[in-house]
Amino acid sequence: MAALDMYAERGQWEKCLETASKQNFKILQKYVALYATHLIKEEDAPKALQLYVQHGAPPNPQNFNIYKRLFLDLINLPETDGPESYRMWADLRNFLLQLVNHRRVHFTADKNTMSLL
Image (cartoon, rainbow, N blue to C red; front, side, top):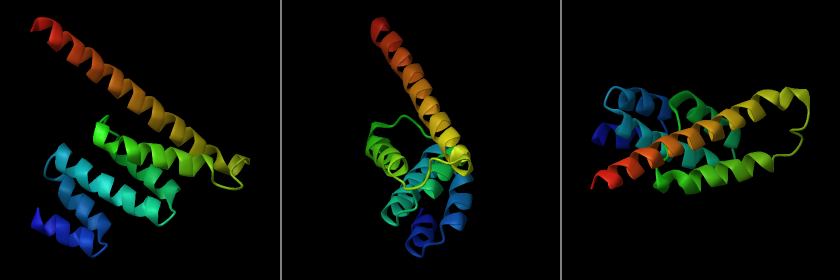
């Protein structure tokens, strides 16, 4: 974990994510969220979206503010109404659909678990 933090602090995000992906999904998602936050602060929402397209967007409540900010930044980008922006809009749609579907699955599983108790 110390090496991952060092990579992140140095801005070596690709190396950080590559190393994190060899650990486990939770660790990878932690660093994906940190990198996405960094990209959003740097006003590079399209790259943050690609990060979630590549690595997935788990329905963790602690990530919802990141997802909300990402959505708002993307829909407020200027000059994204032409055909060259189709891929971004399709990726955003797929990202949101994946998030909703994952949330639905987790909600159903939580509900079923609670009924067993």
